[in-house]
Amino acid sequence: MSGSLLLLPFLVRLDGRPHADWQQFLGRFHPLIVHVPIGLLVLVPLLEISGVFRPALREAAEFVLALAFISCLGALTLGFLLAYGSGDTGTGVTHHMWGGIALSITVLLCLLARPWWLLGNETRLYPATLAAMLLVLLWTAHQGGSLTHGNNYLTEYMPVSLKRWVALGNLQANTPGADTFYARHINPILDANCVACHGEGKVKGGLRMDSYELLMKGGKDGPVIVSGHPERSLLLERVTLPADHKQFMPAEGRPPLKPEEIAWLKAWVQQGASPTATTLKGIFIQENAKEAPLKPVGDYSGMMSEILQMESGQGAKLLPVSSKPSDGLILNTVDVAASFGDVQLAQFQKFSPYIVEAELGRTAVTNASFDTLSKFSHLRALHLEGTAVTGEGLMKLAPLSQLTYLNLSGTKVTAAAVAPLDSMKSLRHVYLYNTPAQPATAADSITQPIAKTAQ
Image (cartoon, rainbow, N blue to C red; front, side):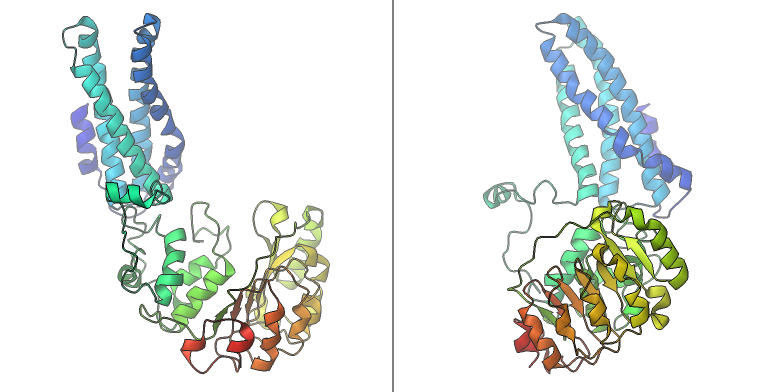
């Protein structure tokens, strides 16, 4: 039995390529089943200790141990199907796999040693094996948790003094390139949303995103970043797909990137995807902006028939942010951008109490759209990049107390038009790349308030 388990990784190698869908389907039950042997194995030493006072509990320990071994084999099989079927590789996957094999073997040794211990022929082997089993269980569980939550999940909030004692993490305050735009804005986005599946521990599609060099290298589908061309960059294509699309990223049920995060990625790629640039042109962050408490969005469920009718007639879509109606809707015009103008936007005013994001980039809307948009009382993000707006009437958006993100890149907005935006205290991210309002030097790109940067 032990020999078969040890030979398994060599007989069926993890080659980093996705395989049959049925393997992935069954494998995804691994996170559910894996908690069964964990609970049983923790229970065994408790039963053995309690058996000193109540012998019946010690008799139950053998049954629990046997059941734990069977469940270990089941969890190991499903885990292997998950890794092999989905094409997962990496040191974390490998460590977790070998941990599961070692744990199964150790549990088997406990089963073999226990009868000798009960007969008094060997008093130390079983307790020692039981202790080893718990240590292997702890290490294997940590590897599995790191795959799901990241390598620093258990140690992220550990006190610095304790980190020094156990020598965990990089304790240097200043790391090379820490003042670059990539280090301050791009890498945190990738680390929080992508590295769990594309890092050292777990590598999907041959792509790693835990360093600049590996990100630019790309994966099995080729480069994911094409400097100067966000429209040709696979990363941006995947993160802007509909959330229910098979290739949407981040995958595995993780929430989509925030509008400002996508805009930072686009701007960074558009301006060369540099690892050393400290600022980008045309990105303004109001550090004094205060995020207003989110107002509850009403339940739009009763309007679904009208929403679907509007979509079939216009082509523009109202996409739910999540399965909860209270999270609101996203107005998506990507499929009909060229024909979507002020008249079409006005037809969505009846749904304005439920729209939290309006994606109007590269549409035919003009300054006249501000009259309609001013009625979108729950609007938090507004995309107007690549439109004909000049900024006249922009202050009609002032009543939108929830608006935190505004993208005006590639428009004709002037410095005079955007200067009054400084009075909108909740507006934190404003994008003016490739506009007359863009400052002459990159050094002025990220500062506060907007009124100063636009002069």
